[in-house]
Length: 308
Length: 308
Image 1 (cartoon, rainbow over the protein chains, first blue to last red):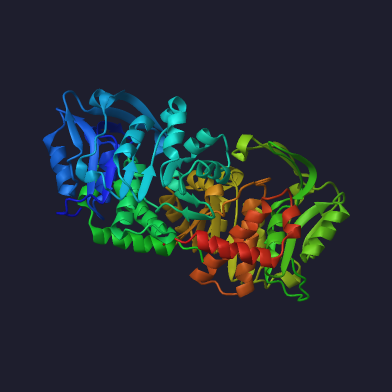
Image 2: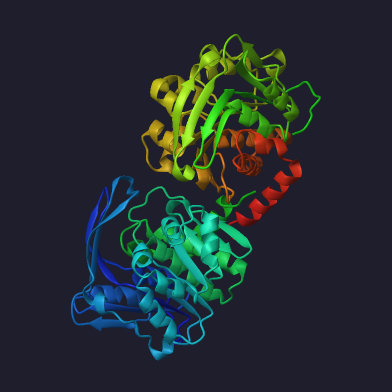
């Protein structure tokens, strides 16, 4: 993490902040810090200054606020509302192959309306993490002229708000969906066809995430295969997609350019930070991470991931 | 395919020759040419001279023999035995994600004993495709001093002949297994641990195949991620692993060197030939394929598969 003194935000991330209880085949952790905005902001903080837009309840532990600050995350856009913080609990089944939600308590997240502080509105890079498409539209209405907007979503919104989601997709630079979401949304099983159908809705880039198998990035005339960094031990895959997105956008914002190769390079950083993130629960590994560690793993990744 | 006049074999492939009946969600083909040796030899024939060791029955169609010859495959090691050729039928379920065997008739394959003609015994490159470990040992006893031996197997042999299979693994240069076989054999779910357990048995290289997600190559001190070439339409995935192996070994034998980068480059060719192979049933697409098409797709693959 780095300390940024600049008040101008290079990257703004809108998403959830949650208190998670997670069980894996080998461990269980209660009331740990989670949420898409937490993972994405922490990952981005290694590369650029980043502002978080979200909501917590009055029960939100001070120690987690302190952790955000240690990452250097700007918290002007983080609302504190009367009530309890969003809570989620889930269990990873044998071999981490499947995740089951045990409970979801929206709490203050139910009435969340993301409001961007004035200093966030001229931001260049924006991540609309997984929240309702209505709220994502509301955020887009508040930003002036972003250079690059990344959108994430989930099956729920495809089921209950497909029209609004389609409208949001038409307004962003890049969309990420996992394989099953892309198939569900488009009705196409083949990923190339599914990606093409999504590109037809407007975004310049579509990134299909395949979990432990990496991802594939599609643009009008090109494809880019992004393997996943191979890991011996995955302790908690929660937030991996958001960590990837945050690291990706942070690295992109650091360089400021959004050409195809800039995007490919930034994806390497997103993958690398995500590979560290899943080595421990919550933000525990990210809180210990250093930029030299990131650069060393990125260099190793380029070496083992190069098609000769 | 190329015409090789040289009588010395650079590559020998031992495996099955079969007559397949295959059903996919969109098509059905009866009595088409199949078997691991067919796919692997056809793929290898683009790069080097290759001899096939296998067995067919007296019912084996002359047109399939002619096709082998058009590929330039040397057939001195192909036995013709009294009786019917090995027959297999299977059906690919929705989205090609799962394959179910409908029937297997071993026929002349039941009594197959692979015998290498004298001109095959000083071969440098050898592929032991999926046959019983006993027969694989019998082949190894007949070769003098091969430079590179690639071994494939299947779940059946892990279940019924694990000790003999372990002995064979200890005698080869490189082992390929798919994810589930590697987990089944080693009892390790994580692929890095599984690969390490397999490397401990003796081979210098272990390649874990992940189907549409590509493969990962492991050696003592290195890993190499090999994505799969992204395809719009897969018409018949039968034989993809054998096509990969044949193309890989053919490309390796063409260069003659077996350094780490030679192996990585050869894997690109194996992947590319396999990506063509699955575009049609049986050897239909391979029979039309040209070396310039292979080279063009390999160049595209290097471009889209490079971690920046």
